[in-house]
Amino acid sequence: MKTRIIQSLLAAGILLQGVAIVKASSPEPIQPKDTIAIICLNDFHGGFVQDVNLGVPGAGNLYSSIENLKKRYPSNMVIAVGDNFGGSFFSNLTHGKLIPYYFNELGITLSALGNHEFDNGQEFLRGKWKNEASRPANWDITYICANIELQKDGKLPDYAVADVVHQISTKNHGIVNVGLVGLVTKSAPSGTKKENVEGLIFESKYSSIVDAICKKESLTKADLQILVAHIGTEMQGNAPAWMEKDEREELSSLPESIRGIASGHSHKQVVGTINKVPVVQGEINGKYVGVLRYTWGDDKKLVAVAPMLEKVKEVSDASKGRKDIDNTIKNILDSTTEPSTQKKLTAKIATVEGDAGLLHDRNKNSRSLTALGSYVCMAYAQAYREKVQKTNMDNIVLAFCHFGGIRRSLPKGEITVLDAGEVLPFENKLRVYNLTGKEIRNIIEAGIKNGKGQLQMNNIVADSIRYNGVTRVVNVHYVVPGKSDIILNDSDTYPVVVDEFIATGGDGYATTLFPESAWLKNIDTLYTTPAFLKFLSTTLKESMNENYSFKAKLNNAEQ
Image (cartoon, rainbow, N blue to C red; front, side, top):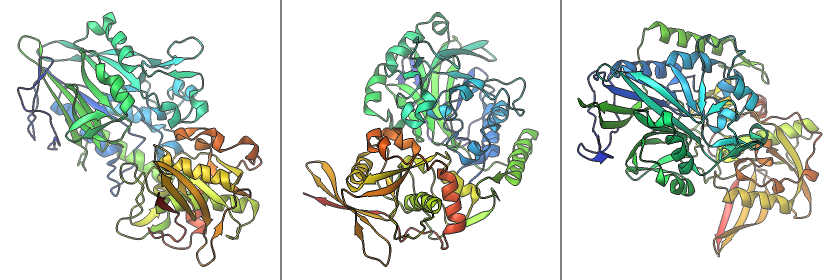
């Protein structure tokens, strides 16, 4: 396949600590073997299944693209930058058991830790699928992360190492030793359940940690030092930057020995330099692959670096490896039944109208109340109504969902169990609270201010006033089409359904918003994903569309 380099960096002659950043042409010939390529896969999130509507290439096309890169750059290594699984309904339903098989096929044995590596708890992380029958006997994975430590003794947990030196053979320069240092974002605990990171400290002094690691004898002897960071980057204008201001400041003084950054976490297309250090990030689900390419001259010194992104496209590939991967995915899709609906993953359960589908994307409309968010919250409320056998809509039941809990938009057309499941891949437990109208207003205010995205709601109209930069919710209307609005009374209590993730502090929501005294602990069998799948397959009798009659609204006034 002809490789399409979507963006290279600065013109030749611009120096990076004495190394030229070279502009790559497209397509390129096979490179000489004194050029090495570090091929980077970030935020795969178990994206095994192709989804044309969402641009997810699927495991087969990603495999073929990486194999083509290996042919182009025979001296190579392939690394993962964290969030390899989790965030995917298919991956979670199959417990990520395809990761060992698939990473073995890709040649990945080294990975940064992302927040989703903790989704199944530290014991699962420690086990590395060792009891999984599909794990190849000769495969293992090493997690690289220098900035986590155990509260009890300050040591790294036994499932991670701070750094690794990996050897790559070249034709003209023998062995190239590549030192890799790993970091995970300090905000990782807010991106998974509290119990999953219990006993851990996530250090935020990134630069000092990396500096200390890079001075280790094994690293100083390496020919290259690379930072593998599950920390968000983005393009600001034409230049990459660390996304969060405090992280940007903390990472501004990395040691000069770092010659490349493989980034992840923010799901952005990133290619360029940060403080003259090449950086790549390839969005999400294997849509792009990052490449850090290094070339040695005749004097055996590093002379050029070319960071770039490779878009993963549909690839015609008759190789045995590709056929095996495609057949494995197909067999699982055809044979797996989703437990709550007892339907096959490919069964159709809903239809979406409108060419734009139902958009819910943290990079496009995270400050909005979305129709898809309201459908999800209606599903949560309906699950509670059915549980207590009060299905009449006159019975006020509210529900909230954090923006990031909804992981995908829905495209126009027929929606399968798999499509709908990928909207809510985590299957968190739902909690029910009896909260006062005032407490509900406080939650909505917190949801408006939340930096991770607008809190989603069902059939609510909230009146708010913004004064001197502060937003206050003054009224909350419960709305049923064709009936009069009901304004919630500050002192009256109403059932509120919310996923356990934010009730326990996830995404920065204060646990005080959900008082334990108001928690109905006897309602303990409701879950996010099954509630949504059942709502679509049995309750919803109409096509889904952007003008959903129960869509929540915010009425904002400035003073």
